[in-house]
Length: 190
Image 1 (cartoon, rainbow, N blue to C red):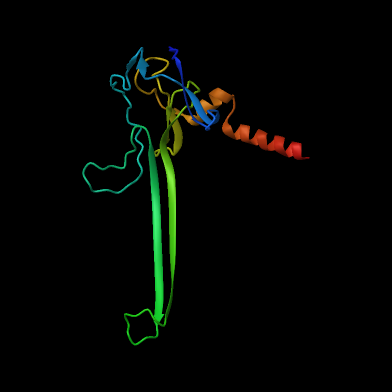
Image 2: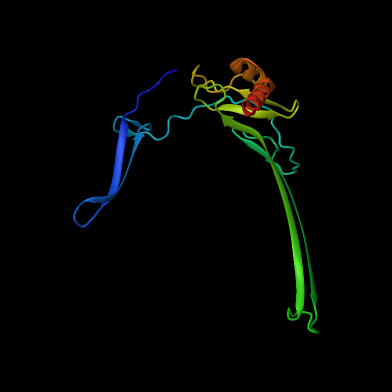
């Protein structure tokens, strides 16, 4: 991995009292990672990425051209919403348009469920965001490693089941780790 040292920049801002003493000062440090020498280069040359299709779908029904239920290359969420409401009012006035001498009530109910389908998060510890996604066919959690830092490629590696990656990193399956933690807590409480 190529690491480029950036110059540390500083900035501060403050308020002075009438006597000239600071009574409030804010300062922060930052790395100048968008400059090259004295020239400001906020955006690098565009690079094409091969992101592939992870076949992540939200199950949305649509009949509009250009809209699909496929998640984007960097995120996807499926939402289900339900709302219902009812209102009842009784009036005791001869004028039915009047609210005088009336009483009423209403009730509303809303339920929402969100399910994350795809997100970008560092899974393998290399500091780069990897693709973590739910495969609808197997209902399994998979990830594809970001290759841009280690290989210089602009894309993602082959998909791997998270359980397999966990076992490789930790040495045992998630259930074994969970069981051991529960047993240790129980033994500590005894």
